[in-house]
Image 1 (cartoon, rainbow, N blue to C red):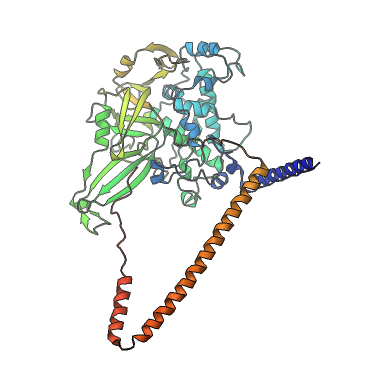
Image 2 (tube, rainbow, N blue to C red; image 1 turned 60 degrees about the vertical axis):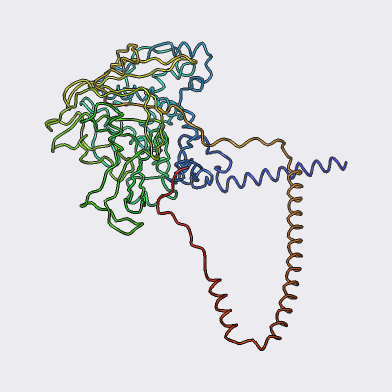
Length: 571
């Protein structure tokens, strides 16, 4: 009976603890129980604030310097796990034979629905960019008549449907057999009027020739706006970024986790070597190719160190002087998926696109590589195209800040055929994954026409316009904690807690007794010293005064605090 009574008491105590944990979870949010982990989308600002662990940046990384949250509106681990193709994860419950049957077929082409080659080529490259494709395809389907996220969420849902159709991901679910015929992206074409930037009012129009790069940045901008709006962030309001409860919270969506990187603009004083760093986010990089013939040389020119002349002298905060400082722009935090635009199109004074005259999205945090204009729809602006071949590698070694390096692999290329900046045709080259350890194959996609090609023929293309790269290796920076060797029941945990409390009380008791002994000893010493001082009444008063002053002066000296004139370096 005593054992049964003890068991019932322990069981009741465990039930009470579970109820208390549930109340605490409801009170402070589900973030404490790991509910926000591995979430790609749908996290609100309030949930991100309640997630105390996710608000902290990763340790031993560039995120500490940037103060970038490790989770925020999207758990970065879920994105990092998608940097390589995982066919088993994509196709779910299908057996290996079915997966091999799907991957055996060539990629599905897209039908041209009237000057939509720019859309087809861009979407085909995105469909074979592993991080973006797997993340978007895994998002839950948007419910009908749902207004969460507005037009941005609708656009994301249409892109999700297109990617699932392109890879036959619904076979065995809502799709009965493997589809190999060309697919018409009618959903995105009908929705193209809703693609607009948060800071520019340009609208796409069906049937008009458009620019592939401009379509890409407007598409990503619209999808990102949908994520922020669903989280409770309205970019249309004045001063919205200053009201964010967490720094850089708007830069933690799955769009930024996939394409987002950071540039570091460093100004170095030539007199005292003081360094001032500024960090800016970017989603793609635009390289000047007017005087270069390869991507590597263009990147070297992009990160070239400049010297500020006498008319642009910089006031150093270290030596408080105006000096001709050194300025350098480098990639500080590399993105998972790197998009490189080769700036082949230039316009006269009438247009600003690709001439670098007006940055796109100024103040919106989109960084470098975006420019205002109307792309292929700009008529009568005196545009021209740089038609010379630009060499690009299949494996790109991207130089980073502080002499670091990041290696990327080529996954897709958008080609612009034609010698004019206001007309032409777009095609795409993509690298399609194979089942198991088989080597990926390259394909040329010209709208609905599909043919297999070699990698050497891809690298020989003379009219490359957009390059899509994926990180070769990604280190998972957030390992899960090791499992406990043994699990304790509620009663055992309570007894262990009581034991620790008693040990702490005993240590405090012993500390108090030792302090009493020390106090009594100090009282005895003070009494002896006062007796000795009373006997030395014959000593001169000036001597004691000088000794006291010397003692005070010596006690007021402090060691100088070490301070670094330069910014914090990376580890």
